[in-house]
Length: 442
Image (cartoon, rainbow, N blue to C red; front, side, top):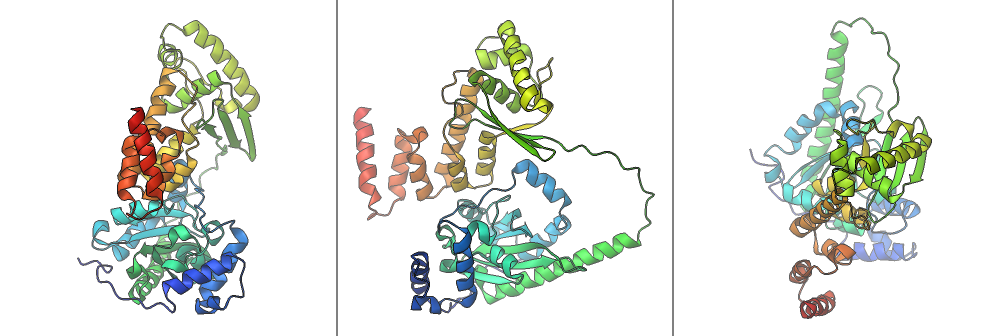
């Protein structure tokens, strides 16, 4: 089947890209009365002004509101979960790799719950944080089709330089809100992002029609459910709110433990050895024998006496700050799942959010630790970050990575950056000097 996005139509915007860019710069400079703003669509001007009120600058990365576990749990109960295949069928009928666009489905707050479509486009847009779990409301990233469609509660097209956020300006997009078919309450948004074809009249017709089809399908499913026999009510069970915990180990020698549950959040700093032990238990959720944990932390399996004493001290710390996390023994295992910021970074890389992942990279995992298990995981994270960025990231992201300690002496990375820079880029001279210095030292 031929993709509806394969036939590009020439879009004639109301103003040229250059005029829009200049108007954008004048607004950012505080010249809200500049006459060039009159050449920008009223819808866009109004959105820019709302964006100015909530954003500190024009290059904000979207916050990742939902980690992998929270996202999976939220999607299962979201009202749009049952129509995702319909969305793919209507907007990506020829298959994702033939589309040239990506399709996103978000909730009423602008958080992206599903992102699908062309793999190459997903890799590029992931670099600016257009990934599942990210918040794309106007308050988070400024003017964009999904965020502005939610703000106005109507379908919206935003073309290239009309985006408030400079990181998004290479792209065009069309989005439409989705409502509850009975109450008309806003429940989500669908968006198509790509080149200029993603903001064509054809795109708007198709996205609007898809939104209406979704609402119709929701109503049919609801009526069908009402017609089915009602099962006798079950006795309600007492629900216990699970505790969520995050261990932060990137770029810090003393781990930081953040625990949330029952409306209470606590943050505590861990001693280096306790951070090592908790990290190993977080990475091995199935549990570890005393011998194996001793190998990972102390480098020797017969460190059981030392390990047992340290585990007693760790338990006392956790009993005061996070009793739900106190590990059991035989094997040593955490009763509550602990997520680490390093694992969250790896999840971002898997989703193609390279720029967001790099922003989350505060440094190596427990950099001063010599525990064998920590050293192995530290190298895993560093290698995964390097390989993902070198394979798919833009040159701007690669250059930012080259400024970190992890890539300070990486000749291969620096040479790749040099090959990707335009011939007249002012950054080339500094890169050449840095490469020559490393080659001389070698």
